[in-house]
Length: 243
Image (cartoon, rainbow, N blue to C red):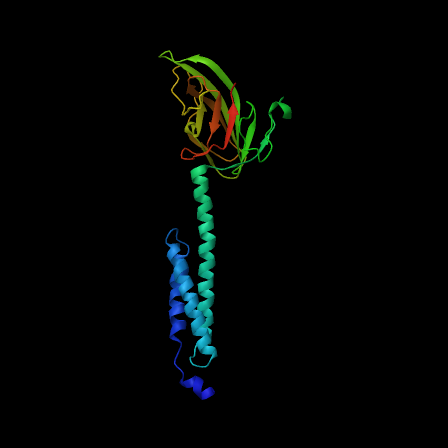
């Protein structure tokens, strides 16, 4: 048997598996490209199994090579699955914004008055004064409403005062275009310019532990305000009733 092993050729399948594994693990960290890394890793695993079987049957040599190739290919597949999950979560946060995880009761508002929102309730139709806590540590509150305003061109305007508190460990973005006002007919519109605005809510970045507040103005008689958490989000994170 020893003579047979010495004369046996080195396993070509194991060599191919090792090459594929190295390529796969190098590509496994790259978004989108790591889809190909998964394919290379799967092919490398198959070649590695074929190579190991050949070695164990004594037809080829290179047992250590086959085992190393198998390990590298399995590791590349695991990295691809892990990174894709991470990139998917990051993309979801970028598109939809952080989701709400809980709310704190507004001062002077009881549970029966809508001062709190039970987890899982969707954070819709909250009472003015309710704070919504987001996953990234950002606390968003609709503080007060100023209805019956008239713009320079005679159109009706309603002002909604909001406050952000960053209770997280990282900076958080804020933007008036993360909000929409909804009228009684269900039409949703972004904020509008108000000529007499004294405290406009502008866009910016809030440091950890920071607070920012201001008023967002909507044209017409909005009955509800919706917070999206991101300008490109399709679904609102929370909504407050204004009337």
